[in-house]
Amino acid sequence: MDRREVLKKGAVLALGGSLLPSGLLSASPLPHLAADLQCARPSLQNRKLGVALVGLGNYSTRQLAPALLETEHCYLAGIVTGTPQKAKEWSDKYSIPEKNIYNYQTFDRLRDNPDIDIVYVVLPNFMHAEYSIRAFEAGKHVICEKPMGLDADECKRMLAARDKAGKKLQVGYRLYYQPDHLKAVEVGSKGRLGKTKMMESGLGFRMAVPGIWRLDKNKGGGGAIMDLGVYCIQSVRRFAGELPRSVSAQGYNTNPDLFRGIYETVTFQLRYPSGAISNCTTSYNAYVDRFYAACEKGWLEINPSFNAGRVPDLKGSEEWTVDAPVSSYQSMAQMDAFALDIKNDRMVLASGEEGLIDLQIIDAVKQSMARGKEVEIIYGR
Image (tube, rainbow, N blue to C red):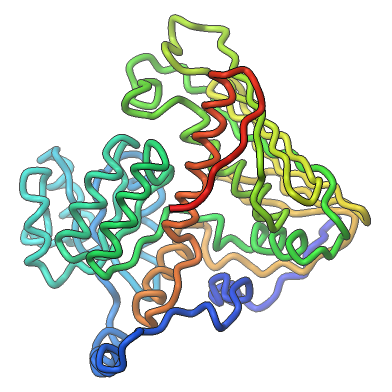
């Protein structure tokens, strides 16, 4: 049964604005700065913002670069890669001029290139903080792929660098702008099914590839809980409309020769001040892709839910109106949203503060596994 009534294409490019009260939109604190921005905006508004992708791996190749061919408010202006052959291939394919092609030794020269407004860090997890901070120091706005950092302390340093530079930071949370997930957040956080009682969220893939950085504890940060856990955490806490107060977590490893120093599967239970609970599962050894919420007056499910290569499907005990996606590439809406945030000097929905919250929860998940007991989650900068 088709449960969705498709609305006018592009309605989702309110870009989550319906979830933010108008009073939260940022404004310049000083009149003369506001006047300067007023003068600067016409030229900014009348052009697409240039994006430089840092790291040309699978996600940049299969998702971000194609999405940037469809974006309305930004475009692929430059690349940073350590592989000369990739530089040539991307230059030919996307008509990137030589002056906008950098390697990791010339990265800091981005500060002198007015074509580049946004640096999108798409590197292994352990490099996120370094290159985001360097991009801020080069005077650029930053999108950082998830997870934002290896831990909450790294996230705090990134936020400090953002504030010092006076720039904006978005975490690569494409699902913050995806219609099915936006609808789920609206239904849950506004109590349209009554009080939330229980939630389940799971994401897992087969990642049995020896030698890849994701399986390296120092480079990946701890396995599936780092790579996939943010999706599970976002879905439950945003549906609940509140932050969990404590967590109990368990780690499992059936192949210690492959998963050295990390757990291949992690499950964790979150408790919320309202009394709601959630159970989340992340795995590098089994496929799962689902969000489910049970409330006083009904239920809601997104299945499939998180995989960028599959179309999310929301259904439930009631029929909900869901906006049509603007593109088959979920990152298109995400990147256009950030460009508009910059142009209009407004708050970022998938902000660095959101990334910090997720890492504070993940830090607590790790502590719970290490201690073998429930631990309180500590928030704040």
